[in-house]
Each structure stands twice: as C-alpha cells, then as structure tokens.
Image 1 (cartoon, helix red, strand yellow):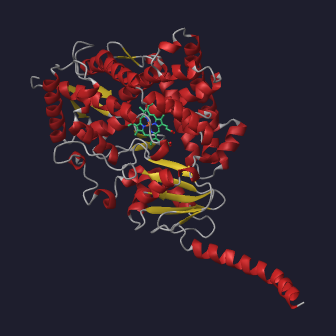
Image 2 (cartoon, rainbow, N blue to C red; image 1 turned 90 degrees about the vertical axis):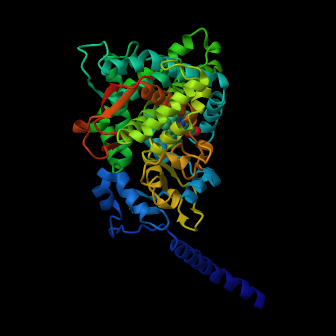
Image 3 (cartoon, rainbow, N blue to C red; image 1 turned 180 degrees about the vertical axis):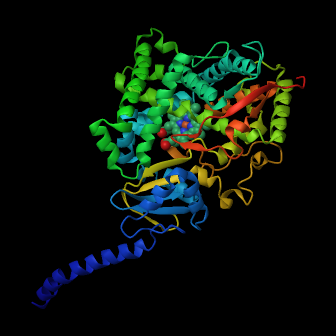
Length: 519
Ligand code: HEM
C-alpha cells in the first residue's frame, strides 16, 4: 500500500519537476544565448530598427559589431521573422561548415527564396539532391583534361579578345587613337561569362568577341542576368519577409521585373541544354554539362538548374576579385612592379615570350602573384557573406546556444578585418603575409580564410578561378599600366553593391596605358 501511495504521488510530482527542470535548463542555457555588444534591442521589434537603419551599409555595420565583440560574432533577433547569428569566429565557422555540417543546411527558407530562379541546382539544394550533383561535378573538376581545357579556354579568351580590347583602349590602331575610359569591371564580367560558358557547357556566348569588340547584343542579356540576381538577393534583405511574396502574388514592382528576368535567363539556359542534347559528340567533349547529359538520367529542367548554378558561380566571382585587385594595385606600384618582375622571371625560366600563353605549370610558379590576389580577396571577398540554417538545437564550441530554425551566417568580409585572425596590421594590404621564408605561398586554414567557403561544400572552382585571375593579371602587367580614373571613381574606397558578389557600384573606370619600358 505504502508503495502504491509512493508511485501515485510520483505520478503527480514528477511531471512538474521534469517540466520545471526542462525550463530551468533552457533558461540557464539561454544565458549562453548569442550576445550583441553595442547593439540595443527594441522591446517589441528586437533588432529590426537597427537592421533597417543600417541596411545601406550592411557589411560595414555588421563588421563593426563583430570586430567589437570578444566572441567575434553578433546575435540578432527580429520577432516573428528571423533570429540568428553572424559570425567571424574561425571556431564557429569550423563547427558549422565541417564538424557539424549535417546540422547546417542551406535550409528550406533560403532554398524557397531562390527556387524560382535557381531551381534545385548545386547551389540551391541540400541532402541527396545536393550530394549527387556535387559528386558528379567534383569528379569533373578533379579531371586533368578539364584542367587543360580551362587553361586553353582562358588563354584563348585573353589572346584573341581581352588583350586586343585593352590595346584598342590604350589607343593602338582602333578608332581615333585616343585613350578611352573603360569599365574594367564590366569587361571582366564578360570575360568570366564567356569562360564559364565554354568550360562548363562548351558554349561560346561571345560577350567579348574576337578582336576585342564588346558585343552589344550580349549587353542586354548580361544586364538581365545581373538584374535577376540582384532582385532575388533583395528578397533576403527585405526586413518584412512576406512583402516579396505578396508582390510576387500580385505580380507588381520588383517581383514583376524579376519574373520577366527569370524567364529570359531560363530561356538562355534551356537553349544551352537543348543544343548540348542534340550535339552528336556529347561523349567526346570536355565540358562539365556534356558529362551530365551523357549519363541520360536527367530531365531538361534538372540540367537547366545545373547550368544556372555554374553561371552564378563563375559569372561575377572572378570579375569581383579582379576588380578590387586592380583598384588596390592602382595605389601600390611596388606590388605591381614585383608581380611584373616575377612574370618576367617565369618567362625566362619557361623560355616563352610576352604575348605567348602561360601553361598551368608556369602559373603555378607565380607565388607572389598568388599571394597578391589572395591578400586582395582577404580584404574584398567576392562572396562576402554566406548563410546556412540551424536544423536542430546545437551549441557552438564556446557553449553558445543556437536554436533550430535560426539563421547562421559567417562574414568573410568581417573575418578579413579581425586582428585576432590576421594581426594588428589586418587592415593593411600586405601580400607578403602569405609568403614563407623561401618565397613560396603558404595557404591559411579555410576556416580563417573563408573566401572559398570550407568543408564539404567548399568551392569547386577555386583552381579554375586562380588560373583565370593569374593569367589575366600576368598578361596585363606584362604589357600595360592600369590607371583608375579617380575623377570618375572618386578618391576613397569604391562603394559596393551587396548582391551575390561584392560588386563596385558604377563599375571600375580605368585608363589603359602601354608600358614604356621594353620587355
Ligand atoms: C574568386 C572566385 C570564386 C570565389 C571567391 C568563390 C567562392 C565560393 C563560395 C564562397 C562558395 C560557397 C557558396 C555557398 O554554398 O553558399 C562557392 C561554391 C561553389 N563554387 Fe565558387 N568561387 C569562385 C569561383 C568559382 C568558379 C570560377 C567556379 C566554376 C565553376 C566555381 C564553382 C563553385 C561551385 C560549383 C560551388 C558549389 C559547391 C557546393 O555547393 O557544393 N566557383 N564558391
């Protein structure tokens, strides 16, 4: 009997004890919730007012908060909409991108926002859907014939299109012989678009045509593609999340423009897919799409989404990296001179002459150039922030709590400005920080230098991007000086547009001069 009373009383006593201890644990755990130093939350609206007030300087604002925080991260809370963290802490990044990778997918929320544009291509999928595309694409990217193909495509684009364009801009031959102001960022985007289309799909869109002509017919499409990208990213920065859904449903405003832009971009990608399907020689080709087509397993829509992912990956990233690099170089003649010396030494060692293509091995010898580009991307990362979502409650390495459904973002831009990672001179452009005593390039951990992402979803095009960027810089600095037109560009750091990539607002106006020294 006494035992029965004991069991019955336990039935009533235990649940409240368990309930209370559950909540007590949560309250205690929540003491470790992410903090935000120097940022006050509104009692009802949370951090919404601060986000709205600083949306025009989002990267710099979040960087200031991260740099000012001992944990190198900021927590934010926007009631009913979004809660999460933006971090610059390498231990957090390693945890999110590698150690507990499975718990930090892109998430349904983000995928849903991009779905009408990117479908379920590599960039916009998780789980199995991502894995099979990643496996196929990684196989292609580690293929040596693709590496040769990349070098050939890039060198041909430089020799037949890019250098002739710069020679014309420098006043050689074309037009009235005057030096013209060129938007280098736009030229580099065209370069990136041509090369990604040729490498990934075996299709030549001729955004830069032979002889260095900028094809006007392509300008409109390039503009449409950029517009689709910017408008879709705009959805993420809209503090009132449902507003884009309402506009889409009503087909008004930016969503109306976006619908039209997406239709044009999809038509372009679908043309590429159909052309590749009809091509008799699919099995003999080196491009990435042909391998997906050859397997005969995928619908046109799936292939279209794969095409779109590669266009997003390759169109603006290298152009962004190079635009900031040439801007930095314009005030650092010492760095430009050292690169030119290195290129000259590699020419001598490989027995080639200026104007001839650089082979893969020759590019690999250019350690200082590699360091100069890496250092530039450290400060101006082409993909400045990257978000995932937290699938189940988790704790960061320092015990900070993350709840399921939170947005978890790392800022490569802020990380480049953290003294705790790079030392007190972190704001200085100093390529030497990447070189060992023997002058060889020393890579940093991808959890500190997050420019190419890290872990299982790390960028597949990193090597291709360096081949492209090093080839362009080496060829340009052999022949030309690039002067940024300060009267047009303004004196300070150029303003940026925050889209998928860090783009200069208004482009990068430059004048191209032939080098006076004999090579
Ligand atoms: C300087 C140039 C580049 C930078 C800084 C860069 C950076 C990045 C970053 C940050 C990601 C992660 C994106 C995310 O998951 O949210 C990524 C993924 C990727 N990148 Fe790049 N990228 C560059 C050039 C390229 C090029 C030229 C290609 C060529 C095809 C490429 C192919 C890819 C692919 C396929 C992924 C998706 C990987 C996956 O989700 O599994 N990237 N890149």
